[in-house]
Amino acid sequence: MRVVQQSGEQAEFHGPATAFEQLPLVLTIEEAAEVLRISRTAAYEQARIWRETDGRMGLPVVVLGRSLRVPRFQVERMLGCEALEAGPVPISPPGADLAP
Image (tube, rainbow, N blue to C red):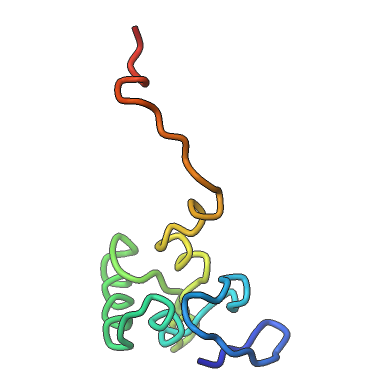
């Protein structure tokens, strides 16, 4: 997939293994579908659901005139990338969070 970066240069996107930082700040529905590994039709359906439910469900989109764009940070949030970048989460033994 080819994406246009903020500088106006085109870059090649080779699937989910590519770092999110290399993606543009906003993705087309087709680009988001490829990152999420869903069909174009499924992505548009999820965008429709997002709009109809006032953002409670579906694929988060921004409406720019007649165009729909998916913010990169929303895709990262959906996939839990912040948690992955933050490193391992310490696990407490069962019952450790109970006060005596």
